[in-house]
Length: 220
Ligand code: DX5
Ligand code: ZN
Image (cartoon, rainbow, N blue to C red; front, side):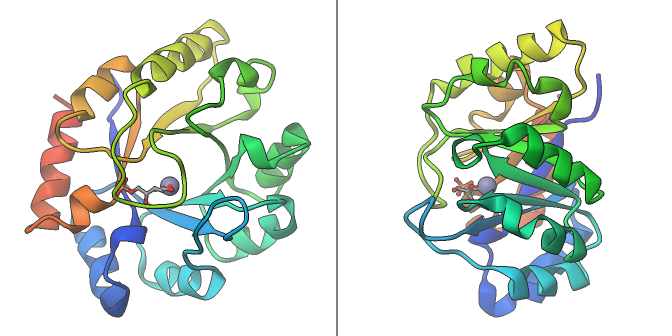
């Protein structure tokens, strides 16, 4: 079995001590930095944008997994590549020409990701699955950290895993929102490859230890 990955979400970090929190992730067993960019239009919240990503990139020594919760993401693909994004994830619901967007992400040298809102059917990816390196399965409604996990996600992860296998695709499944040590194992058993965790990591007394535990649960 391939190693299951942990991606702490910087949205829950202490922005007054951003470099400290980035170094914490560098020195922890975490695999990726998960970076949530929100525009206040696609989602009812504004998080942070390019200058903050640039500051994170400067210190981050691991994969930079950017999750765009913005309308018309095509406008910024090249810019995110230049800012050091390894993976660039766009929302299915925000892309009229998703196939074209995915090709543009790859042409810019990044891995292509598609995020699905909780109400969006997995079946809608059937005709584009070969072009997707990563599906970000939203297990909360995007826009905020610290929300509770939506139980229907297990079913969607299983459906997606089945589709990936049927198509012989190499797509990774990432679960994003409300992930804790309580649901981690069940998500991995359903077919998840990457677990994003914001509040669970950063609100913990010992984030480094929390990442280590989550990673060992995911790989148990
Ligand atoms: C929600 C974001 C998530 C969020 C996860 O819109 O996409 O990545 O930061 O935070 P927690 O783990 O606190 O639900
Ligand atoms: Zn996210």
